[in-house]
Amino acid sequence: MAIRRTPSEVKAIYRYPIKGLSPEPMQRVALQAGCAFPFDRVFALARPGAPIDPEAPQWAKKGLFLMSMLDDRLCEIATHLDPVSLRLTIAREERILLEADVGTSAGRATVETFFRGHVPGLREAPRLVRSRDRHFMDKPENLISLINLATLRSLEAQWGYEINPLRFRANLYVDGLAPWREFDWIGADLQIGGVAFRVDCRNGRCGATNVDPVTGRRDLDIPGALRRAFGHKDLGVYLRALEAGAVQVGDHVTAPDVTAFSPEAAPASEAASRRFICRGCYFIYEDAPGKTDFADAPADWKCPDCGTDKGNFRPYRAQIRAAQ
Image (spheres, rainbow, N blue to C red):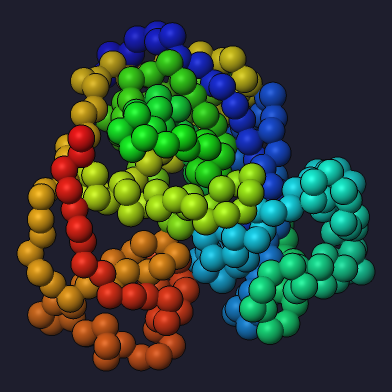
């Protein structure tokens, strides 16, 4: 496939050391072939009762952890975790609420107690766990998330309101491309700075994007708005690093030379069916012949996408309109 140099560039780089907590901006990141974004979602707060071994935690679906999809109060605080000292600082409006060394059991217990009081509805303290050789990203593969800022601007123009890019909790934010261009890259190779990537798949959005990352208010319905406009909830793409190298803010993006993507409007209506939608990740379960009806699913059934309980679902009837 032909490759061309584009005027696009990296505008921002972020990592999230603790799943569901604050982003940490970076000017430069060194990546390894086949590896995840370094020090990104290496810690997580496991929900009380979640089947996660605190001594040897494995990847699990996001509904088993505290995160903004379900726990919007996490966005009310600002956190910073030093990758060397493992000193965690928690603050609100520049006032430090807690400092603790999460490399020690005493420090982790202090952090767990803090979040027991900060997040409503927890029957006991969560467990702060660390993955020694993997991560707690939404997908188990070693993927790196990317957002095309031009796509966000096109949605802002269409929907009539501003969208903070940090709602999407991506690692790389690029600009200078056509809107939706990234969807035509799936399966192709992409060069960003000193690293070649394979564009793996689209990123399906969940209810975490509905929460304002500054105020903590659940004030938008991003996945619902995407479904109404385009019939899907995808925005952004996942990448796989093909080689070792560095990416820094200002680096050029060498994109595949493909026909620009043009999103199709969703159909005006859908056939009636019994559907149930997860309030967290917006997964839709549809009753169908040969498939267990949702009402007959056992009480301990979990969402196959995010892992939250059956009680998190509600009846769904799409009200789809064409995009303007």
